[in-house]
Amino acid sequence: MIRSIIEQTGVKIDVEDSGKVNVASNDEVSANKALQIIRDLTASAEVGKTYLGKVSRLADFGAFVEILPGLDGLLHISEVAEHRIKDVRDELKEGDQVLVKVLAVEGNRIKLSRKAILKEQRAKMGGAPPPDSDEGADGGSTSQSSSHSGR
Image (cartoon, rainbow, N blue to C red):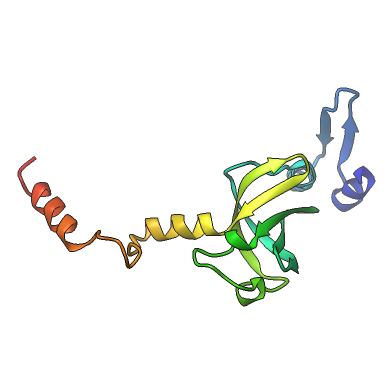
């Protein structure tokens, strides 16, 4: 892998026994490209972080999504959408790019959620509450009148 990075970028790479990696180059662009390749290779999934992933495989119980090069997580069918879905294929297909949030990392298993992202986006957009909710016009007029009370 190191040889491949050297061939692609023309940099010099030394790896110390401690694991520290030194990258040297006369060309800043090449050095930055090599550093980005190394970061991508050594990246790991972080709980709570959002990734733009690619659906790599579908199964009856969910979809496997590649969130980093060579790193897949499971998007369980219950985490695909805010509503209940019968078949993952109704929402996703292989090759789709999808925003997902890492819910948990257990050993080499990564649990993902698209539902969490959809809820966050709806909240940011001031999305309507669920139909059976009592939230609505009353609360809005109260907050408006208090905002005009001269504070």
